[in-house]
Length: 314
Image (cartoon, rainbow, N blue to C red; front, top):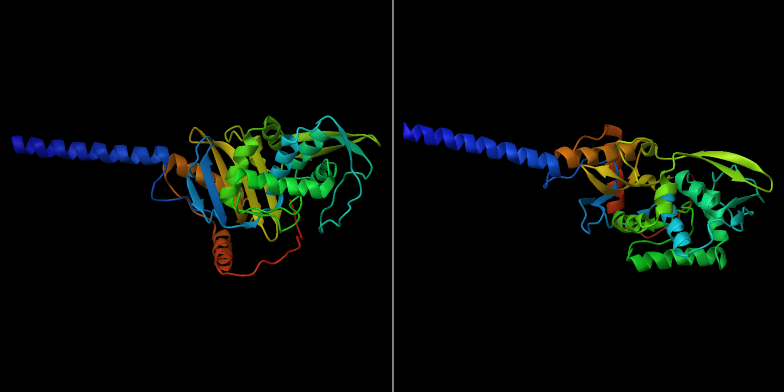
């Protein structure tokens, strides 16, 4: 009888230990597994921690499209410029990439703080260009300041040639963009402007106004608690997203580079969020997974750097 009791006790202890292990995996995510992602390159980190939660080709330099504008904002704010100054939207001194259409009228003016806001929340390319054009020392000095800031932050796989992201020669890595997000978080203006849902900009000379919406639909959801956001798209870069949001009770930096569909980055963010809460990797739609596999195979092959011309942008 004593031996039987010991057997039953051992079984009960085993069951309790197994249940505890499952609960721990649900709370902290599976240590041996990363979430299934449609994005070709990715990284995530808890705000305030130096290590990555996971990475996927995180050191691979790739085009980053409008994610560039986070560095544009960082350079502007670190320069300590007067954010209430009225900036004039002048004709471009360099040809814009195709499809760089804007509703802003040449010669009109908008305060620098609002130019920055629409560049971040709505990815307005003419706004980002004007921030650089009006920088002390001009456009070229601004681009140099972007590269200087990248070097200062230790972003070793990053290079900028323009402030908008319209050039596919703007490159970075997922790991470097985690570093950029950490730096951007130090500025309340970047957090606020990048997560503004809707904004009506009031221009002068002539007087008119334009309405803008955020390119990331998740900023409208309280359950996501988004505190920093930037989307991007070029044909060469795919769909991109850098975001800081609440996941499993923590503020998490998510970097997602190069996926197929307009909703793929949001889907990846959802899979990361569930993975952190449950340890389950999730699944990716067949078309998005095929794109990721084909693009990964191409990028894994050594090839010379080529200057590319952007055709689309968001």
